[in-house]
Amino acid sequence: MLPRPILKDNFSLTYRKIPVLAIGREIYIDTSLILEALEHSFPPSQGYGSLYPGDLATTYRPLIRGFASYWTDRPLFRVTTGLIPASVWRTHFGTDRANLIGHQLDAEKLERKVPQNLSGLDLQLSLLEPLFTTSTTAGSGSGSGKKKKWIFDDDGEGESGPSAADIALWYQLDWGEKISRGQGIENLTGGGTPDGDGEGLGSVLNEERYPGLVGWFERVKSYFEGLPDTETRIEKEDEGAIAEMMDRLKTAAPPSVSSIEDKYERVPLIPTPAGPHTSLDGRNGLVPGAAVSVAPDDTGRDSPTIGTLLAITPEEVVLEPGRIGDGNGPKAGPVRVHFPRVGFVVRPLATPRGKTARL
Image (cartoon, rainbow, N blue to C red; front, side, top):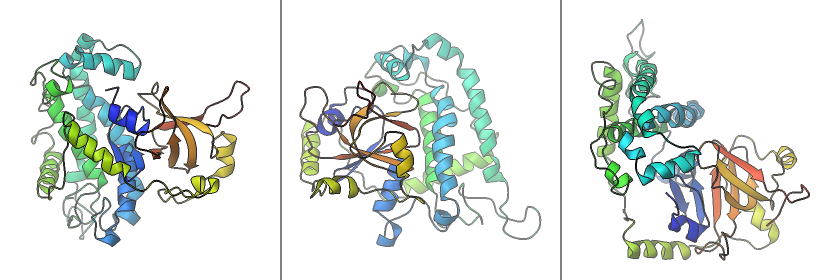
């Protein structure tokens, strides 16, 4: 929830969602772009793992990205959020979410819609189940192949491990199962309602109804539990650790700029099949140096990030954030903020005469 001083004060970001990734002074917004930034910055060729293991990068990468962005993050997410206990919406958190969404939330109405949303989840699970109960094409003869271990697993061996598709779906179901039971809602609402007030997913997500999906869920869970723990967690109450983290970021080398041309040309970008469409972007007023706003296309549209456009590709937009109010710009110093174009809208800020503004 706002005001999110770490983002607002240090990076001049009014972005209201999670997650946010910082690689040095490059700030990446939204899971869809963050995954690509991690894959590009820490490639398997340097000894790192991959979100597209084995041959998936060349065979299924576009489908995996679409699965996560257009299915898991949208229709599936909508039905799982519809299972959040109604007690949550009666707290100040509910008021904040109403402001984020842009309309009032009727807790009683949302409570009555839980069966409808469970039915919607049942639909999503029904669509997914054949992924794990239908044999692969390996072998000869009908049904002679092996069952898939992971979502994109052609041969049933699954030796390379799960992909970004498995991560996206597993997280959504795990989060949905927990939040629908009321796990963690006391923390979510700042003590506004106790944990445990929720129906859960058990009536639709169970081994009898969807054995393949439940088996896959437990398999992914075991895989994650077997990974080494590399996280250094900092709680929001630990002001000293937060200050230390921000000091480390401030000491990171600022974006290298030796001329005004460098400012716009030496921006690290995620590789795309086709480069920037300069003429088309120009027709839309999206030219380097223009003042622009970037905001999600669903919720949080009233809290856009404003800044100077540095670079734009078919999949990514990068800006230098401007000042917020009477501030002096990001406390962290010069940063570049990267947004995906999937799920976001970038618009030029027009002057009173209709010309593109520049900051």
